[in-house]
Length: 116
Image (cartoon, rainbow, N blue to C red; front, top):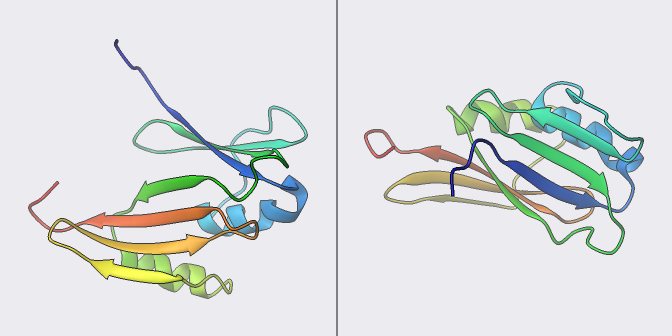
């Protein structure tokens, strides 16, 4: 198999209620609104994050986002009232776990210097 890209999906109960939270997370409005219940953000390194209304699966998604500076991202998000529910520092990554309004787990991860 040759993969050329990836689309990570996050299910929310009501996109209208979650859209502002995700705009804060990504620091900008969605790059695409392909349907009324879908918002997508293109990532600079390739791939997309697809947030969509899916009441049956809402709150059960897990997405990891790799960031350059986790401290800067957490400070920016805190200005919007978004705080991590947990933080950890391991041998290879620093991580912070966030929960969106539906309870989906969003993990911010910063590689430790010299490990990625």
